[in-house]
Amino acid sequence: GAVVSQHPSWVICKSGTSVKIECRSLDFQATTMFWYRQFPKQSLMLMATSNEGSKATYEQGVEKDKFLINHASLTLSTLTVTSAHPEDSSFYICSPNTLGGPNYGYTFGSGTRLTVV
Amino acid sequence: AQSVTQPDIHITVSEGASLELRCNYSYGATPYLFWYVQSPGQGLQLLLKYFSGDTLVQGIKGFEAEFKRSQSSFNLRKPSVHWSDAAEYFCAVGSSNTGKLIFGQGTTLQVKP
Image (tube, rainbow over the protein chains, first blue to last red):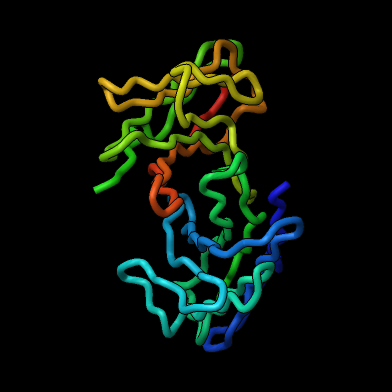
């Protein structure tokens, strides 16, 4: 259980355009989704937490107007990188909050590698 | 504040040798601890986790880790490393309140033939 599908796996976009990343929970309902970012050869850092039916919460230093998060249903959370720039090139990974369950810490999306040119 | 430290950025071991990757954490309560492996360009795979109980935890691929509260450590070990173990390894602590994971900086494991 607790399977998450994330796509696209990789995307190349031009500077100034927007990119949407989707994360779908396939066999459970995710009321909360964590979005992490990993720059090349660095660790994963939590960017934001999306909450179904309410506003996302952002970690310090993350621009909420640049990284738009939508969690309109219990099975879909999206991250949109708006007006992308080369410094936004990174690996983005979603992970549902399964705290309290047997899958806590187990489930991650496969990641999206964003390259902005 | 919660934090995770992996003191070794890069480790090289010979194939067949034993391995220990260090992890130290700072957390106010009983931590949820994890070890993950990440191959180049890939996502994360959970190796093992500790929530409570037996402090020696067995994981997949022959890995184990030992939780030592007195040392705030959760070191990962493997008795005999295989070439396929070459990858990036991350230690993480999970918040028992929010579920958020805080990751260490990662340790790159290189395996010599």
